[in-house]
Image: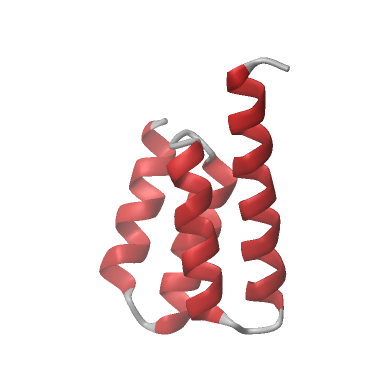
Length: 74
């Protein structure tokens, strides 16, 4: 298996973990998982959008908008 494919799988694993945590309203756990997802693949647009949504739900609008702006520029 290619190195880049493994990185994509790891990024998707942490994205799915963050999504599951966000669905049960574990926002701090979701942020941790989504940040790990972005460490493996900075171009994971879904992870960036979800991270922006989690920040917005927590009231961190500036961080939310910065994540959304980064996702639109990718």
